[in-house]
Structures are given as structure tokens and as C-alpha cells.
Image 1 (cartoon, rainbow, N blue to C red):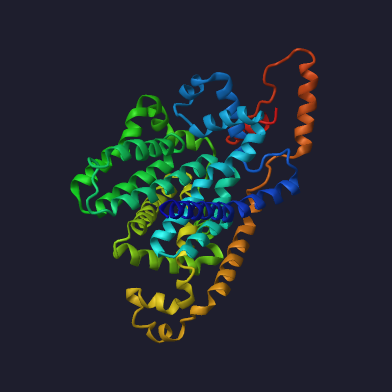
Image 2: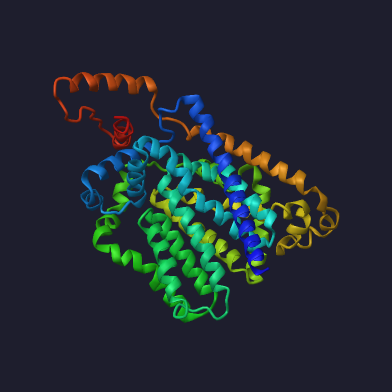
Length: 436
């Protein structure tokens, strides 16, 4: 009887995992398939995609000297190089790997939403939204280091939130789990994309501080410092030259209207009503003691603190918008939005004005319609993904350079022949190099 129960539980868990992965992956893959059908499978989608291929080629040729030269581990590039050896071609590997590294994000969206709402259906909605939202599409297009680091960060947030909600939790009692699970995941994020690790570190420290346990907070600070301290001899030049290296990319300050428009787009876009409803619910659940809700709030607070700093310093502020956990927020508000009057009446300064609406706007049986409307607004917002989920070179240009390169190779010349100058030269150069 016990064995049958265990088998049933295992089957149920496997079905849940399969459903979550399917809901997340199918729409995400379809967006890219449509673009590949339009532009051809031979070209890379996204600006940075070909750069990853070029870096992976360099790592395969130079080994650890490539890491030392860049003063950063770049784990995604190392993983890509190994995966390229596995499938036999780096260009093919880079077209597949982003979908694989995005899979942890599917689980995190489901798990965190389930913990916050106690509603399995909304967990599935979060997984589906995760594959539809423009935030994920932007990361999947060509910001693959960000995608991997964000996905692992959300998984770690779900794990930490689940474990510290136990009143008796302590690092000393759970030291094996901390060292064998938490620390490797922290290191994976830190050595993949340091900017995301900054957000994760601050979020976890704030989460630990929220428990009002001084020892837990101090130990948490020491824990998140470990990966950086270990790698400091390697990454110190990277840290010291970060601002200067960003300036070489040619980033220019954006007018306020552009920043506002972009913020609107990546904070839900046309689904912003669900974002508002979800934020209200998450804030309530955080006050009620939900550690998962608190983690999401701490993540959002950290982004809110870093966003204006990055904007004023001329750093790529948009990277903070891409990693707003919109799928979790929107899914949490999927049912709340059906009685928006009740939701708004729980916001202090609106309480006196929303009493009448609260009584009139409860539509419990409209969830399927509301869900359909949510998916429609998300699809309309994500329809703008074509502006970045596309090749940045033409097949005709690639063919011409390929012909010239083949002709010169016939005469035994093997040195680089493509030389460009100016702020964008390094980026364009790697785009072309990756094709040969």
C-alpha cells in the first residue's frame, strides 16, 4: 500500500514537472521558430548571440587563458563550448542552449507562485506566462548569461524561502544543505553574470534581515560574499574596469520618455492591471509571513534601488527591467484582478474611495475569460519582440564575406581581414566573426 502511494506521488510529481516545462517551453520556442522561418535558420537571432559563439570558439582554442584575459569565469561561455562539442557545432549549440538554461525559470515561476497563492492553477499560469512575457523573450533573444543567472537566482530564491520559513532554521543545523546546494547555486550566478548576482545578494540579505535574526543575517552576508572573495584574484580587474568597459559599448543617455516607455513595456505592458493586482496580493502575503512573497518583494526593492543609480551613471539600466519577475507577479494577480475594486480598497489611501466598487466588482466565475484576456494582452505586448529577436546581419552580407575569405584562404593568408573602428566596432566585429 505504501509503495503504491509512493508510486502515485512520483507519477503526480512527474506529471506536474512535465506540464510546467511544456507550458513554459512551447510558447518560448514558437516565438523563435517563427523568427527563424522568417529570416532563415542559418542566421543568429539577437545582437549578442554571435558574440557568445565567438567567445566559445576562443575558449575552446585558448582554454583558461581566455578566462584570465577577460578577468571573469563566464560560465555560460564555458557551458556553451562544452555543449558545442557534444552536439558537434557551436552555432547549433547556441541556438538550442538558451532554451535549456531557461528551464529552471519555469520551475521557479511555478514554485514561487504556488507558495505565494497556494493555488496550483496559478502556478501553471505563471509557467505559461513565463514563456510568453516579453521579459523572458528579451533574455532568450541574446542575453543568455542574464537568462541563466536570473533563472538560477529565482530557483535559489524558492529554495531559500522554503527552508527559512521553518522557525528553527539556522546555518549551523543546515550547513550541509547550505554548502552543497546554496553555495554552488550562488557561485553559478556569480560566475555567470555579476550584475544579477548583485541583485540576488542584496535580495537575500534583505530577506534574512526581514527575519530580525541578527545571527542569520550576518551569516547570510558572509555566505553571499564567499563566491566573490574566492574569485577576487581573478575578477578584481573586471570589477575595477567595469564602468570604463561599459562606456566603450557606446551607451548614450536616454530621454525620460524613452525610459518610461521601456519601463511600462517590461513591467507588464498591456497587462499592467494584473501587475498591480499581483503586487497588492504579494505585499499582503509578505505581511502575513510568506517567505516566497518576501523574497519577491526584496528582489523588487533591490531593483528599484539599483535602477535609478544605473540610469544616473549611464550604465545599462534596462538589464534591471528584464529581470523583474513579471510571470510570478502577473499570475499572482490573475484571480485578484477579477475583483479589482476589492484589491484597490485594500490599498490604504484608496480605501475610502473604493468601498462601493468593492461591493459591485466580484466576478468569481469569470476566471477563464480573465485568463484569456491576460494572455491576449501579454501576446500583444510580446509582439514587439521582433525588434530584438532578429538577425543583425543579412545573409547576403555573410555570403559576400564568405566568398572573399575563401578566395584569400586559397592563397594561404590566415590573418584576420575584418577590421572596424568606432564605439560599436567590437560588437559588430564579433557578429561577423562568429559566422566563420
